[in-house]
Amino acid sequence: PPGHALAAAARVRLADLAADPWIGPFPGNPCHDVVVLACEHAGFQPPIEHLSDDFRAVVALAAAGAGVALVPRSALRGMDLDGAVVRPVDGVAPTRRVFAAVRNGAEEHPLIRP
Image (cartoon, rainbow, N blue to C red; front, side):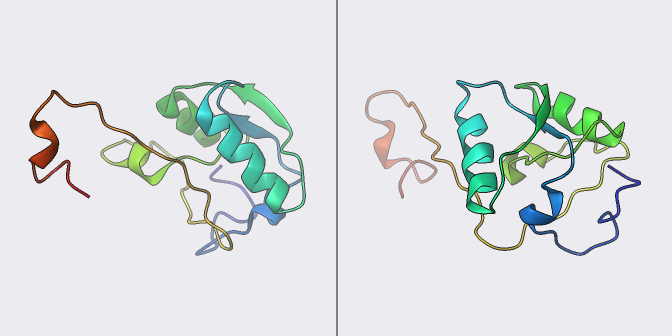
């Protein structure tokens, strides 16, 4: 959130957010597992107080001061942050696997090839 003690930091450590209320995806969403595992790796269970699978809602809740959140960089592209403070995370970067479904024969398209 904008008034957070770490809002002026260039980067943050997840462990420094352990006491903050968290905003996260609903259980069952793969991103929920990413958040929980990243926080566990940092030594704490995230106290998730608000749930949303909509990253725009998550960012809006953080901007309103409802808590902190992990949001994929790809979800932030083109998003109006509207007062939210976004900082990269130090340490082990949380990751998630993303897959694409394409029509048969499209595997050779330059955007699909690894």
